[in-house]
Length: 406
Image 1 (cartoon, one colour):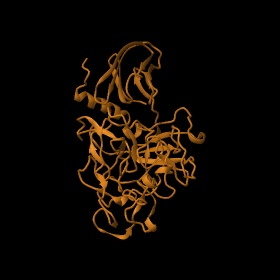
Image 2 (cartoon, helix red, strand yellow; image 1 turned 30 degrees about the horizontal axis):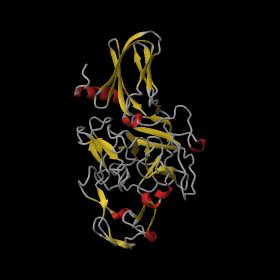
Image 3 (tube, one colour; image 1 turned 45 degrees about the vertical axis):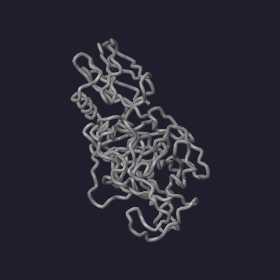
Image 4 (cartoon, helix red, strand yellow; image 1 turned 90 degrees about the horizontal axis):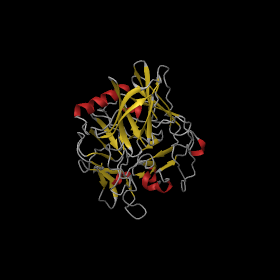
C-alpha cells in the first residue's frame, strides 16, 4: 500500500470524522479521570455538551499541569465554575469592529481563560497608552506563562507554553483554543501556504515596534488625546500596546493575528488565529488575538460576571472515546488523547479479522497491523506528538477516528 494517501481519500477521511464530530467539539482536554490541579481543584474541561448550534465548555479555569509561583502577585487561583458557549457556525463580522475587552476573550483547550495584551491600566488613567500586560505583569507569570487575576481567574495573555510543544516545527500546531467569535486558535506553526501546502514553519505577526521617541501620536498616525511618557529606560518601547503598529503583509497574519487557511482539522479552510512567537520562541505582539475580533461574538461570554451560560436541556454530552456500530456490535477506540497507545475493542467479545492503519494529518502511513481478536492494542509511543488518524477495517466495514498523541 502506498505510504501517501491520495488527496480524495484524505478529504474522505476528514468527511467521515466531521460526520461524527466537528473540531469545536473534539478539540478539548476533557477530565475523564477526576484529576486535580492547583489546590486539588478539578482540572481541565469538566464536561462538554453540544446542540446543533452551540458547544458548552464547563471548566474550572485550572489546568492539568503545575502552575505557580507568581512573584509579586498576591492573587490565588480559584475555581471559576465557568460554562463558556461557542457557536458551531462562526461568522465574519462585517459591521463595526468588536474590541477584544479586558477579561477573558477566549478559552484554551484545557478550559483556562485567554486574555488580550492589555492589563487593566493606562497612563495616568487617561484611557490611552494602555499598558502591555506581557511587559508590565510579565515578572509575575509562572513558568507556563500564566497568573491569577484578582478574582482568582488563572489566565494567559500569551502563548501557553505548557499546553503544547511550541518548539515542535515538524508538525502543524494543534488547535489550542477558541476565541469567543468561535474561530480556532492554533499554536505557532502552520503550513507555509494558505492552501495547506508547503513546509511547516512559524507564523509571523505583522506587527512591529514603532520608531518613536515620544508618545504623541497613535499607531494610525492620528494625534493622541493625551501624550504618553517619553520612551526611556522606565518606559521602553513595547511598554504600551500603542507602541506597536500593524504593517500589512509584514508577516503571515492580518491585524487580528490570523488568516484564512487550510488546516488539518479544517480541510476546506477556516479563519484561524495563531499564537505568535519570535525565532527563540519568545512571545511576540499581539501574542494571541489583536485588538479586535475577526468574527461576530455571542452574548454571555464577555463582560462583568460573564462565562456562566446555561446548558439547554436538549444538549448532548460528548465523550472523547470513539464508539461506532459494527454489525450490531460496538467498536471502541480509547484513550483519546493518549500518551502512547490506544485500544480497539469490540463489545460483543467475538474475535474479528481487523486491519488497523495509523496516518498523520498529511496522509503518511505510520502503522499497519492485522489482528484477530476482540481487543487490540496499538502502540504509538514511537511516534512524535501530534494529531493522527486511525482507520479500522473489519470485513467490508470501515471507520476513521482522529486521535491526539500527547
